[in-house]
Length: 181
Length: 211
Image (cartoon, rainbow over all chains, first blue to last red; front, side, top):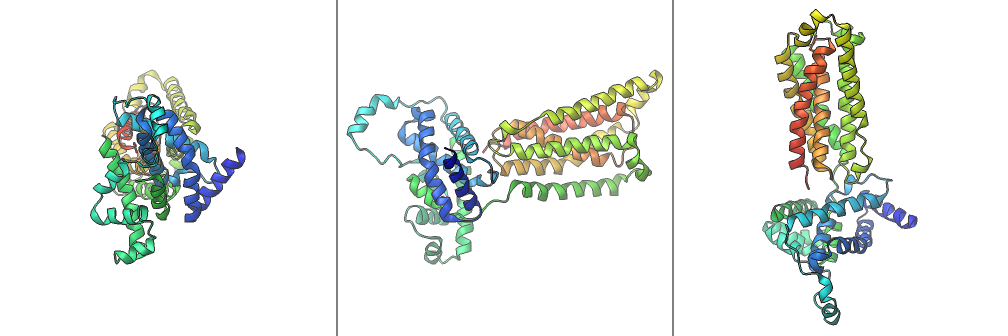
């Protein structure tokens, strides 16, 4: 457990120092843990709903990663963000409660169904970005293009793509907030 | 969008936000410099500023409001972190409040009964109650901005602390002009100004500091 915490801290510290690979590894490592927490706390929202919440959590972790105190434990920080976003998700969805997923467990088990990590909300939010920002997010996120490739395709400098991507992600968080209100 | 795709997108964004401490200082220091210049250019520092700064009776309210401001600003940096609520200790602020009330009591006892009312009313209530809030605007705004860049999970409490930080420091700057040295005056009226600003900041924080 202690090793795991240290590993997270090392990855996040490297990420905050500009190591993009370490950052991707960090996000990949914490995602299953966070997914488990979100499902335990927000199971009533259904599998896809939980994935929406999880993606909100990840976006928040990303945009607020500078609020982690280097050297401090990652877990309380990460869980505080997760908890805040799960509570937020319930508030945003008002009193509307989805049917309990347990009743459908056997059906789900029999039917492979949609990929559990497919979520709908983020795609909607990306659609609300302006054309170029949405294009950049789609190229990098859905098509797996690098920043350099995206820049070439859109005749933008790499720096401009980076700035546009950064702004797009911030806008996604703001859109999300407005959308749920 | 799949979560793996989102992770790839997030990892591609390598522009890192500024650390909160830097954000706070970059906003607060110019805000305080402007407040200081404003007092100096419009009201002027008190004529005996040199001796006032070394005389305990005059200096104590600068120290008290300054400590309040700095302690609250440090607390704001703690509350700006999502897990900061657990680590944030409000007692240093309470210590300042108790010290101020202690001074008030001491002044009440030591001031002759017939002089108490005059010492409390003073001559500059209006200036005090107008200037301290005006001087507080930029400092409070800069602390709120820092908190907005952060990720507080206690928006109202963070707004409260931002109000105390900005108005405490603003009051310390105002005290360089003000010659009302009796705690009966400054604990009452500085206190009222600080409480009013803090109330407004708490209400703003509760709305603005959600994320």
